[in-house]
Length: 314
Ligand code: ZN
Image (cartoon, rainbow, N blue to C red; front, side, top):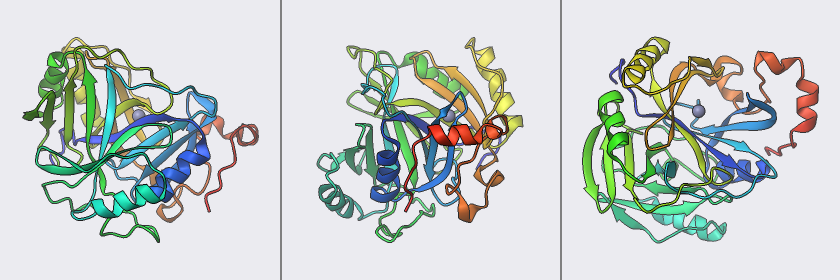
């Protein structure tokens, strides 16, 4: 791990509809752990769920804002349109059967860049796939009674961005974020960073005729890149500013510190730190069990709990 570099993906954030359905799909069907149950810091009447491995290691975290009455969104240009999760070799048969048994919309197994993958949609229509990485992925998975280590999701493999033109986005990946071109299949252009061994792949899908997407249920809101700490975070802020792009000030997200900027292709990028992590306000063995609120909302806990739907986590 090269400590002053972008260390692949930190998290991806998407929009969901019904909160219980979202919780059930990601914890029960996919076997991820809810590592944090908090609220949208900009809209505390809405949950913010974080799903990942045991401790919520960066590179495993998919987060959702579940909005009960949100309209369905639509993938399109200027969005992150597909999320790839790394799974063990030999596990795709297990997943295909599981998807059939649980009525999960999915496709046939296909091959991309010499790797087998199984595409599927979550209950809101979010596009994801499971992929068996050519490179050994030694990350330790979260396990459930139904999903053991031989088949369990290890964390992100990659994310796909759909773009009308890839040049300016590729330049951001290469000259600011330290990625390198890693091949092309049809209109799919792959970029990887060797600063870390997993969650280190971004695919740019060149789609000149694609309409802009609609960012609502079943679509991604932003992707976050990972850095070690705030010192490295602020070094990247300088690089983004020097490239002439607008970027936010450092924002305290309780579990990490963040910067946000929109890359030229329209996708919202975030850079987020490893510190302080999800165990800052509850022990690792209790992650996700309690509604955690940032300090500014703690005084309003009773009202917030009244507004939020009750989630059955059994
Ligand atoms: Zn984020």
